[in-house]
Length: 293
Image 1 (cartoon, rainbow, N blue to C red):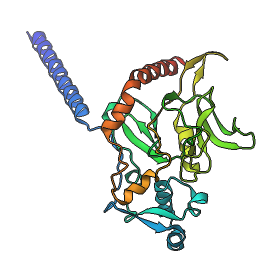
Image 2: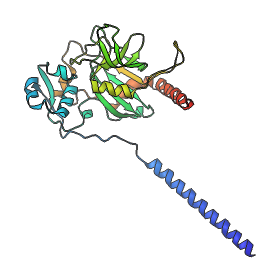
Image 3: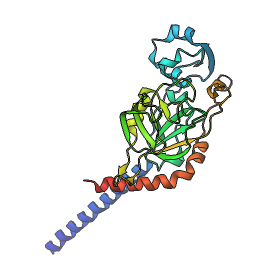
Image 4: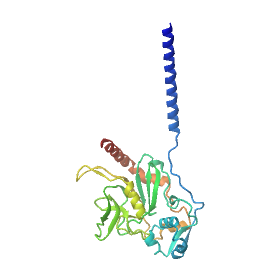
């Protein structure tokens, strides 16, 4: 009887331990499910309004403020070398916010949550955005193809990259931090002069800092052999058209601070046709990375 008593106690203890473990697991699972998705914290400006200022006059009192200069360059879709050449520039009344609040892309796009990485270029806004699982992680200005040599629109994938390469249009042009997206046409994004309007021969020009970021952010293709692509790189979507012959679109910000805003619904509309293709390539890349020791 004593043996039976001890055996019964042991069994009871084991049952209690198992029940406690199950409850702990259930509690953990509930907690994990309840965890909110990670979001990037951004500082909003206290107010959002814009006005024109004479460039030289504005620079006299602000040329040593790197934070202000970064926002001013981005707003006017230009760079340091070309900013001072502009007669008048668009300037915000308040510089206290992060750059994401001065450029048009939404901070989050639900339709892109399954997409690990994507880079989106808006032709009319002359701006780009990098998203990770639907979250805006980086944004900046761009100068795309001129009217004579427009940048092609649609879905592309990054393929090969080079810290420095030579332009296919002119062998005297050195392209730094170049990432090709259309191999046959020789279209890619890279560092180059931003005069403040579409001026390229179809490529997507970037400031140096932005070009370096995208150079590291995007993935190269994986080749099966010299002729065949095994896995495509990071998806790049270019959409819209630039209003050539009209005032620069960002001038409208002076009248309406939200004039260039790109809504989440607009991004969803522009990307929806490409999502199946993007997810399929993403799946292939994940399988390849798992298979590679």
